[in-house]
Image (cartoon, rainbow, N blue to C red; front, side, top):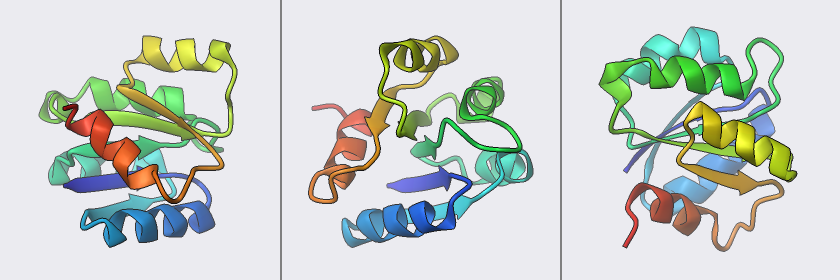
Length: 121
């Protein structure tokens, strides 16, 4: 599975990358939704992990731009954030996310959570 991670924290990106690569997934990443949008479209990942709170463009705005790209129609978008309130879950769902995972993630189950959202059994 190809996964693209957008988070403004390199420590989070590196952590998620280790967890996903150790589960056999190919991972791409970046800290800016704006500059990575063309790269995401070009790679057509199976999953796009997006942080909610980012400086340049927040995750909800990024999800809107990703959903506007017909090339990404098959990609699953997963919000990975520390915001665990129903208000944010609803905002994310309304924006078009396919899944919502809260930080801190459980390293034992993170990859399988992403897999379950991308390929439900």
